Length: 297
Image (cartoon, rainbow, N blue to C red; front, side, top):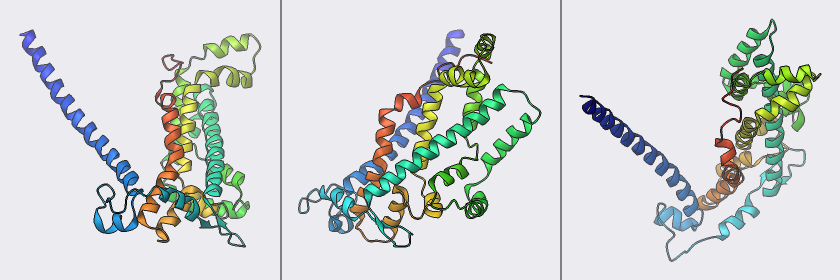
C-alpha cells in the first residue's frame, strides 16, 4: 500500500512539473520573441519592415542594415527645455542617465538601509509608528505623490537640480526597505555586543560589522535600483527638463515620428544595452543568497 501511495505522489509531482515546465517555456519564448523581434527588425530597411515582412528576416533585396545603429548615434537627439533649447545628443543623455541612476540609487539605498537598521536593531517609542509609516508610504501610487513633489520642488528650487531631486525622491523608504529590514533581522546582534565590550561605538558597529554582513544584499539592491532609475523617464521629464535622460529621450524619439521604426528599435536596444550588460556581468551577485541569512537575531 505504501508503494502505491508513493507512486501516486510521484505521478502528481510529475504532472505538476510538466505544468511548471510549460509555463516556464511559454514565458521564456515570449521574452525571447520580444528580444529577437527588436534585434532583427532594428537591422531592416524601413520599407522592408513596413511593407514586406515585419516578422521575418530582412529581404535579400534590402539586406541587413547595420548602419541603423550609427544613424541612431547621429539622429537620437532631444531638445532640452533650457533657455536656448539646445539639443542633447546620445552621449549627453547617456551621461545624464548615468549620473541620475547612480546618485538616486546611492541616496535611496542609504536612506532605506538607515531606516531599516534603526527599526530592526533598536528599541524606541516611535518604532511601530515609523515602521507603519514606511510601509504605508510604500503602498502609495507614484502619481499620488506627484502633487506634493512638484510643490516641494518649487518651494526649495529643486528643478533642474540633480542633487535636490535625489534628496527629494529618496524620502520614500520603498520596497527595498522591507528587504533590508528582513536582512538586518536575520543577522545576530551577538557580533555587536562583542564589539561593544571591546569599546566600539554604534557607528563603528554599523560600518565595520553590520554592513559587511549584508554586503550581498546591498550590492544586489543597488543593481536593481540602478536599473529602476535608468528606466525612469517621468521624474527627469518633470523635474530635470534641462538634462534629458536616455529613457526620456527614447520616449520623445519614438513619439515625434522623426525616425523610421527600425531606427527606433535600434535606439531602444542601445538604451537597454547598459543595463543588460550590467545584469549579465553581475547576475550571480544579484541572484546570490545573503551571506549571513541563516543567522537569527
